[in-house]
Image (cartoon, rainbow, N blue to C red):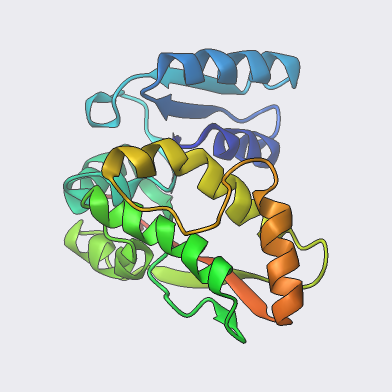
Length: 232
């Protein structure tokens, strides 16, 4: 089972192969239709199935070998309760894997590159404006414990760049472009002198190269646990 972005479902499909089955859960009907079309085009139609349902309402008598969620828990009002409920869909001996992020770091360029820090800060501000913990990834251990899953194994890593052509420039540029309407809606001021369009990634790259800085993207946290006895 994949509770999260459709890309995760297709990665899972590559792992399980033609003999496996993947169920993706998605609330947006348009996203489900697009994912189903992609599955058919990519030859995963017999492996991946997408359910158009709210995560809180998804239920099945089937028990899964693995539950995977990417950037899901941080958006839920009670992540521990949701994780506990979803984990009940995993068979004894199965695995629960959750992947969430942290955008709370204010020191993301060294030497300082002001435009990079200012644009990165927009992500943090938007999370807070919507009542979402910008450092949620750091809370995964507590969420697993509160959900009754026991102590998880946790790994983390941050996207890092600075070298010409680094993908980190495209990442932040496209991220800020994508959230611009939400920033305006939330009343979050945009950085002075910054044009948010297709040129932003190149603008960020030039500024970072001129600063000779190393820059950071968001930090990713992955936590997983094996349910040796299943859940009561």
